[in-house]
Each structure stands twice: as C-alpha cells, then as structure tokens.
Amino acid sequence: MRLGDTLAVTLFGESHGLVVGALVEGIPPGIKIDAESLADDLSRRRPGGHLASKRREDDECHILSGINEGFTTGWPILLVIANKDARSSDYSFLPNHPRPGHADLPELVRSKGHSDLRGGGGNSARLTAGLVAAANLCRPIEENSDWQVEAHVHSIGDVVSAGIETLPSGTGEEWERTRCRDQEAAREMVALVEKMRSERDSIGSSVELRISGLPLGFGQPWYDGIEPALAKALMAIPAARAVEFGRGTKASQMRGSEHNDTWSNGDEGPKPKEIRADGAIGGMATGGDLFVMVHFKPPSSISQSQNTLNLVSGEEEELIVLGRHDPVIAPRAVAVVESSARLVLSDLSIQGGWSIE
Image (cartoon, helix red, strand yellow):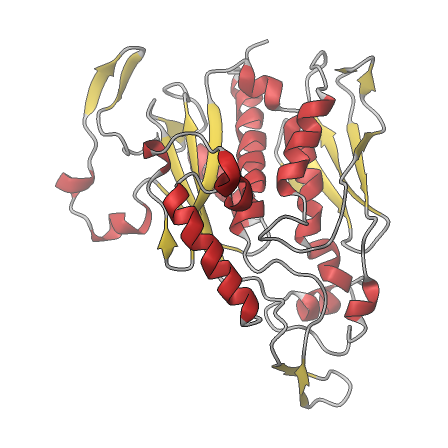
C-alpha cells in the first residue's frame, strides 16, 4: 500500500467503508496547494462518466494535516475522501461466493476471513482516488522541472489509436467521453463499449503514457531506475496486466541493427535520433521521450451468468454480479497512469537532486 522512497504515499480505505485516502510523506515545504487543480484531477478519475460505472461520488478531498495557509509545511499530509454512494446490498453474496476474476478469495484467506470484500474492499480501484489526490500535490514539482507526463487511451478491444506523439492535445466531446486523442478511433471505441454493455460484458483496453523532457542521466541504475520504479507503480493499478517500455515486446523480435538508437546532438545536448527511441536505458534517461504502454484486462464484474465456488457447500454454483461497474478500464485509468508516473518521477527528482526549488 506504500509507493515511493523519499517521497512516499500510503493508500488506505475500502470501497464501501467510510473513506478512502492517502498519507503523503516527503513533500517539501512551501509548495502551494491548488484546490481547483486538485478537484479537476479527481474529476477525471471519478465514476459516473459516459463509459464508466454509474456510482456517483463527488470525490471532494479534505486535507487534514501538513498544510498551513495554503502551503505545504514539510510534515506528513493526510488526504481524506468520503464514500457517499456505496450500495453494499449488491454484494450480499459475499464472502461465500467469490467473484470470478476478482481478488475476493485470496484476500479472504490473507485476512483470515476478516476483510471487507464489498466492492473489492481495499483492493478496489476506488483507492486510486487517494493516489490521484496525492499526485496532484506534486504538480508544482513537475511544473518547475523539465519533465512532463501525459497519457491517453490507446486502445479499447481491437480499436487502436494512432501514437500519442502524432496527435494534438485532447479536446471536445469525444475526448471527454473516452480520453482518447484520436477522434476517429474514439468514436469507434464508444460504439464498441456500448455493444459490450448491451451484451452485459466488458472489454480490455490500454493507456499510452508519454514522458518528455527528462534530462540525460536522470534516474538511478538497477532496481531504483526509471523503468523498474514506473513498472512497480503502474502494475499496482487494479486490472493492469502488462507494462511495455519503448518498443516493448516487439523488441524481442527485432535485430540489434534495427533496435539500436543513434545518438545525435540536439538543441539541449546529446539525445537519441529516432522519434520513438528508448527514453531510458539502464534505469536512466537518455534525453529522448519515454513511451510506456499499460495494458488492462476487461473489468471482471459483468452481469452475465458465471459459475463460482460456494465456499460453504464446496459446489460450483451460478453467480450473477449485480451493481454498477465499469465496462472498460482505460478511460478512467488515464488520470491514474499519469498520477502514478508523476509520483514516481517526483520521488526520483528529489532523490537525485533534480528537483528545482
């Protein structure tokens, strides 16, 4: 539940408990809190959108410590967000009928039967609200540094967008509905998700992340490097199933003569010549853009009839999961992917002395 080293975030709460939130440690003193920016970031992750669960949460974030007169003090910051629209009656089948594709049964064993499984409990994507709120506090670190994070929906099912580097910033109705910058692909994505809904099913998806402006040498070697740190954070997002850097799995099918990037002199010093060259090597930045793809499985809660194990009788039984669930992950995950990257890079910035005061 804890992410980061010098700048660390600990998530807490349950989907159907009173609150979710985050404890943020290591934020330097003197950073201004922007309430409007915080609310905007949370709104992009919030349920209730066109392609999301119909659960209605206003996600108003209360900052209970570590702030004085609108600025951080350097002490731990406690962020709390109330759960106001949980509908626990939809989970009356738990714990005796664990849901297919969910962590209900492993969590039940881990907690020796004491965990709150409603809505996924502490394993729910609801906890990413605290993650997004924590990352918002790091926006001034990003803004005062050379690097920038941006993400969009790359694919839903077999509908695939153009690369993020070829597309303008997201605007308009299609962007608001899908968080995909490619308007033509976005329209096809909407139609596909609506088809999944009509069939009471869900669909897999992916988010593409672009990190630009990382100075040459930024990061750490080995286990504390850019890629390992990002992989840990991004793979912890609920429903994430794979993370690719640069050319990703395609690299395993390439020759060295194809994959090797040429070093050239840029306006701000040496950098790889190719547009989609490796943005990090050996855990450290190359000076080029870093492209990351995060793949998400289809949401496991679907309203089709499925079989599960009755833990009391030991027999397989039919289960229909009721409630309000996302038919696809990526549109709401865009804000979570950006936030995870922002937290990791802010931590590495402070560790390595790259953070600009």
